[in-house]
Amino acid sequence: MKTSPDVLRTARRRYVTVNLLFWLPTGLSFGTAVLLFTERGLSLAAVAACFAAHSITAAVLELPTGGLSDVLGRRPILALAGVFNVAALLLQSVVSSPAMLALSMALVGAGRALSSGPAEAWYVDTVQAHSGPDADLRTGLARGSTAVAVALAVGTLTGGAIPWLLSLGPDLGAQLAEATGGLLVPMSVPRLLGAAVAVGFVLYVLSALREPPREPSTLGQVVRGVPATVLQGLKLGTHEATVRRVLLGSAAAGAGLAAMELLVPGRAAGVTGSLESGAVLYSVLSCAGFVLSGFGSSLAPLVARLTRSGERAVLVSFALGVCGLVLLAVTARSTVPVALGLAVLGFGIFYLGLGAAGPNENELLHRRVTSAQRATALSVQSLALQISAGLSGVVMGAMAAGAGPWLLAAGVLMLGTLLWVRAAVGGGTVQPPPAEHTEEADAVAAARG
Image 1 (cartoon, helix red, strand yellow):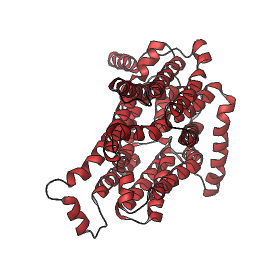
Image 2: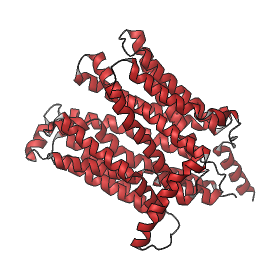
Image 3: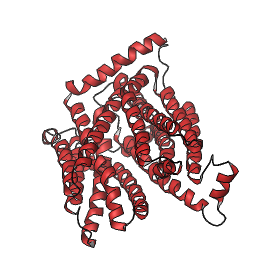
Image 4: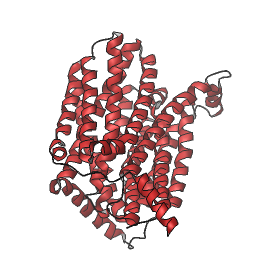
């Protein structure tokens, strides 16, 4: 089956734009979340409770919302995710009550659960509808992952810089707080900007993400259809080996990500000598991690071509992530420049490896699930990562500081890597020609025809 290259490019561009618009508000609020909540008078324990509200909501709604997307369609669920984000960011901008701030984080969690899968499912559905089940997916998935990383990196730097800029010269931040009776503070501004971007996201989704009309459903049909779809999604990993590898591999990656989020901030504070300067260093490192993850995602098609299969590409990428965690483990207690340099190298290659693994994993997943199960499968994948990250974080937090937590994360990711050995040795899925070559050939053929 052949289709116009313009159709594929348009689908890819819209998928990238949706990812940028959805994750940019998250980046804008990422770096100042704890600082805003503490400025509103919350203790660290209360801040942790607010973040727990996010995690619990996202985990509880992950599968039902994926099933809802498969039943009702991708566009309405994505738009609803954007509406939840708008409400959450506006609440965070103006409220100071711990209960309301916890509610705002629960809304963020609901938006995260709603957004987990529909955009990617829309892109895959669109490409396969026009080019058949063997169409190249990896290039678009890689660019989508890169867009997420870029949005988070740009948003983190911008959101962190805005309050600082407002404090320069005439103290605009103080004037803002005084003019609004303390309702708005400098760290509210990145969230107001994020809310405006989130409104743009909703409008873009409604206008750009066209999909075939689905059969009209009553509320009862939807309620009955979602549990059945969720159950089918949960069964995917038991019936198909590759899907099982993807889900377990995502769980293994969750342990590594938990180690980064839990251990790096303290390491940064230890290097700089204070919590404040450590927070600045951690923000810079987080931005670098997002950039490297995006760069790794952009390299995913190249890795798959060099290794000659998606399975081998995942194996190599995960192995690179393991090496990064091991480097962080062996340098955990040292502050000499060489050790710090190796730690930074380990940090970088971990994110580079996981970035390259993601699009290759998801391309394999999409080839083994139907459109009716696609968003649910992505939600199961996300849930596996979240559960693993949460449990790993609890265990690592109870361990003594030093190499132990890093080695635990490396060991879990190594198990996830070994899952792919048999598939990689067995030959894997030989890669098709790069998408750009196929599109050029189609264009030439169209011109001649």
